Amino acid sequence: MQRFLTRGWLIQRTFRLRKRRLFLLGVVLLCLAPPAAAQGVLRIGVVDDQAPCSDVVNRSFEGSAVDVWYQVASRADLLHTFVALRKPDEAVRAAARGQVDLVVSCLNITPFRLYEAAFTTPYSDDGLSLLTRREQSSFATIIKNLRASAIIRDSIALLIALGLGFALILWITSREFQHRDIVGDNKRATFYKGWMMLAMGTGIYKMGSAPLSMSIIALNNFVRLVITSIFVAGTTSVVLKVSKPVDISNAKDLRSALEDKIGVVSDSVAQAWLDRSADAFLTAEDQLKMIVPFDSSIAMVASLEQGNVGSVLADSASIATMKRKIIHPNDYEIVGQTLYRTPQAFAVGARLDGKTLKKVNVALAQLKFEGEVDRTLKRWQPAHNH
Image (tube, rainbow, N blue to C red; front, side, top):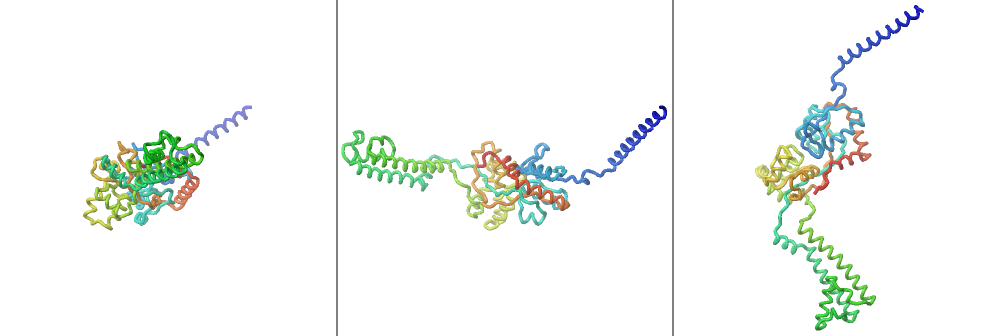
């Protein structure tokens, strides 16, 4: 019995010694472990002030591109840490120097950026939009615009002409208008009264009860409603100045906007595109006067509200977000756009290994194919873009 107790004690002692050795080994290994970066933690640069794509708010990183990256990192099983970067072009240069592994934002893939850094597979695309203050028209100006509208002029002419035509057909088929409420002092007065009733759609039940007369009246009513709808839509468009944005790639429209100064965020694609487009018809001196760079979108929008610039140019998604944040958004409208769209992606750091890049590209492609990217981008779109 004593022998068995001694043997059990030896086994327990051996087990405790092994546990202690394993614990000490774990402590040593933990102390000797490389830092987090050496274990594959990616440095992800997030461009600030690029809402809705990427933004840094109270040390929190957010935006549609950030959400897309979270999905990529989860699917590719990648560890990461975020680093705030000021501007898109600065972020691309940081990637080229290997200061970050990836830059997360809606970075437009442009020729001059491709000279500096590589990009992941595109996951989105966007164009440029021009936001300006809506003009306040006087009553006299509205009347003048109504008179100048071809749709309104044609609608009125058609209402009069077709009403006259239907009145003549009905006059002939009914052998003149017989109802006592229509009959006037003479035939001319009677016909004119019936014509006006057809044109206005009032009291038309008095103009004949025969099947042929009722068919003519029904057809007249249908045509009148269609033309009246076109007239109302045309009038609304003129009064509220509802119009499609013009193509600012057109030199004439762009020059007109530049006369009132255009604000852009410095080191952005909008500034690069505007500088290059203006080279065709403006001197360098005029460009300095008409193209106003700002350090941030907040400063740019504030200048627009104060009337220091006539309009601001940026990515369409960013313009929609800026418009929503303005105190009186209905006082502003998007008057111009580029009709083409540029692919957007993440910038790739110079030191990122090919295996990790492949994981990122595959994850992006899968998310795009499954519709997750589009759903994420849609969640970040403002409710009203115009």
